[in-house]
Image (cartoon, rainbow, N blue to C red; front, top):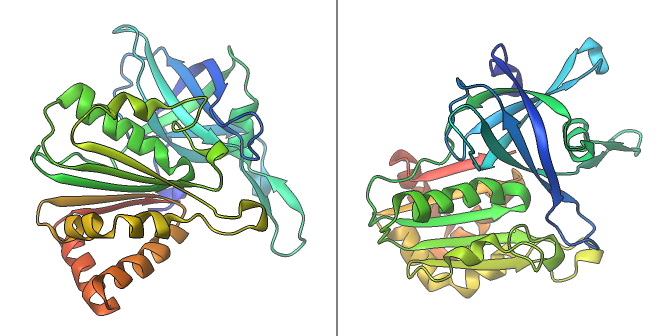
Amino acid sequence: MRLQDFDTSKQYQATLVSSERITEDDAPTEVKELIFDIKHTDFQYQLGQLVGVLVPGPHDFGHETHFRLYTIADDPKTSHIQQKITLCVRRCNYIDDYSGEQYQGIASNYLCDLKPGANVTLSGPYGLPFEIPDDKAADILMIGMGTGIAPFRAFIKHIYHNLGGWQGKVRLFYGAHTGLEMLYMNDKRDDFSNYYDEDTFKAYQAISPRPHWGEPIAIEQALEQHEHEVWDMICHHKTYVYVAGLEAISESLDKIFSKMAKNEEKWQRRKAELKAGKRWIELLY
């Protein structure tokens, strides 16, 4: 589904309550956790859903607003008439393919520059990309990169805080360029430590071996270090696989799992089975 296909006609005003950097201060990547107060009783949502942020213009090509989607990473609600949501936002910049010039990402820089008390316009919520299996004995394999951690934070919180009694394995593989860029898994914020005592939960980190040389995040090595368990989960009839991050992660995982399967055809056949059973779910951007 393309961004222009989302209905933004129903809009809500939200006020920024707090803005906290959750990457280390000396990390090259800046990611902020933003908490918004929404004073609309008809704004009903679930953790992990998407909300649209409409950045006021004017913008290029005559657009009055600039629209981007973000995952609701947490829901620190305060009352039945006042709701709060948490968004995880990475300050983005990109290089123009033709001019070679660097430009700021419109929505991410707009949000990261906001000060508490500022008002923003939201739309949605949209969908629920990661639905939790009905069977609490189901195994869950999550693979995320960068701000792809946001839906998993909401997902895991719901499993252990709201549902409870989860019997299946819950495994999280998460990658960043450096340890300083790990979101919710660094010295400044380690939210996942809340679940390390759960018998069914384990989390594994993957970083780039030489980030300053631009080498990719070593998600392959992290998965291969636990190849036996990962492949057993992939083959199990009760396993659900969730993937979140940049589109490039999909191709990387195909290579990794083809290697585990010993050949690409076997992996593609297994992946097709998972997709057909709605047990392979991706949230890519």
